[in-house]
Amino acid sequence: MIIVTGAAGFIGSRLLHELQERGYADLVAVDDFSRADKVRNLEGIKLSARVERKDFPAWIDANEKLIQFIFHLGARTDTTEFNQAVFDELNLHYSQRVWERCAQYAIPLIYASSAATYGNGDLGYSDTDDALPFKLKPLNPYGESKNDFDKWALQRDAKPFFWAGLKFFNVYGPNEYHKGRMASVVFHAFRQIRDTGGMQLFRSHRPDYADGGQLRDFVYVKDVCDVCIFLMEHRKHSGIYNLGSGTARTFLSLAHNVFKAMGRPEHIAFIDTPADIRDKYQYFTEAEMGKLRGVGYCKPFHTLEEGIEDYVRNYLLR
Image 1: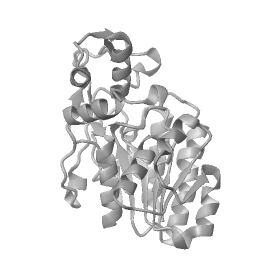
Image 2 (image 1 turned 180 degrees about the vertical axis):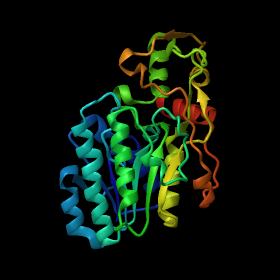
Image 3 (image 1 turned 30 degrees about the horizontal axis):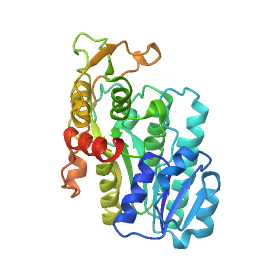
Image 4 (image 1 turned 60 degrees about the vertical axis):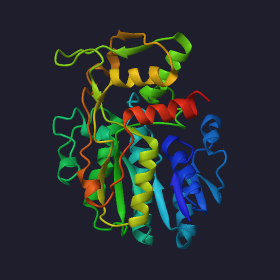
């Protein structure tokens, strides 16, 4: 039995699709299933059970002998939400309850961390130093909650026999349609171009970056799922891992590729970065991927060109 929390969400639902395509059965989805726009992501997946998020810790207690692996991907991910109590409950305390049961029952665990833990990036993006999480200063409560759990996990004496925390960078791809403002720039670019014929990018508010020259590590969700399954199948070398493409690209490059994939002429305008996020805006992120490569993951990641072409032509345009 393989369990995915956040199962109706973006990465969780794509992971379930990929597990099913690779022949894995006895799949269990855990989530708050009250949103129809999210539940739609589970169409076509044969599930052994659906478990409500609030019931899951007790469900583990009742079914622990049947569980082979848990992917704990469920979280509150809105970086514009500033109620720390919400993040503490869903991203920290809830995750602690899942971890403790995995340690008690010897259940291997992969959980979702985030590149938001790195804050403004002044301390770099290295996942090889277990002391680094204790020095990081995330820029919002979401990042703080993820970093707090990373620190808590590293300090535990009782750990699952295998565990991995994955620091997701800027993930894009199919099944993010319900995420609203938190959907990827690729998704928003596609909708703007489709609806208006052009798109808007944030203007740079730093002299060392040109407009549209801000850099992000964009990683395709299919690569994220492949790494998750690789780690599940190998179950060695526990720890925290970056999960990005390893190559930072500009927002202008992203825009060019969305226009190209859609077969549309380019019309790009620049607008001011919203005031509520301007002082917390990251101008550069790039995952150091040597740690994951060092444990045997050798597949190439989709380039930005390849990922956008697949996403736009095979999903968004349909």
